[in-house]
Image (cartoon, rainbow, N blue to C red; front, side):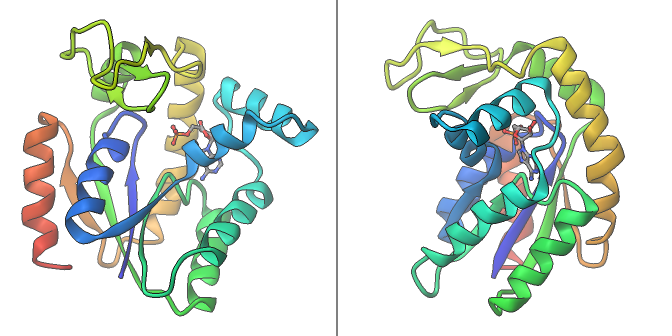
Length: 208
Ligand code: AMP
C-alpha cells in the first residue's frame, strides 16, 4: 500500500517521510525535490519552473503529473511509494487518484498536522544542506551538515515566498485534503522530530 503524506510547509514531511520510508520499505516520491532537480536543467521549461518555485507558486499540474507518471513507469514491480508534496490542489488529487487507480495501486492518506504559527517559526529558521539536501531545524547549531556540506537557506524560504506558499496551502491544499477525509490518519506534528516520528510509527504500525 502507498502512503500520501500531507502537511503544511515545515510540518516535517521530508524528515518524517524518510523515517516512514525506511520503517515500511517505501520508495519516496518527493515532488518539491523532483521539481527543484528539473529546474536546474538548461531548458525553457526548467527556467519557468525555477521562477515559479522561487515565487512560492504551484507548478502547473501537467508538468507535475508528467514527472509522477515517469517515476511510476520506472518503478520496480511490487514497490510501495510514499508521496511527499502531492497532491497540492483538488485538480491534482483527481489526476493522482486516477493515475493510481489505472496502475491498480492502493493508498492511505496521512496528515502531519501543525499550526501556521509553528510553520512560520520553522520555515524562517531552518537550513538546508547544499550537498545532500537534509533540512536542519534551528536546534542544529553546527556550521556544516553531518555530510560536511554547506548549510544554506532555501531560496523559497524568504518571507514573501513563505506567505505565498502558506496561502496556497490554505486555499488549495486544504480542500484537496478534504477529499481524503474518510480514512485520513492525522498525526500531531508539533513536537520534536523524535517524538513525532515515535507517534507516527505507533499509529501506522496498526495500519501498515
Ligand atoms: P516543497 O519542497 O514541497 O516545499 O515544494 C517546493 C515548491 O515546489 C513549491 O512551493 C511549489 O512551487 C513546487 N511544488 C512542490 N510540489 C508541488 C505540487 N504537487 N504541485 C505543484 N507545485 C509543487
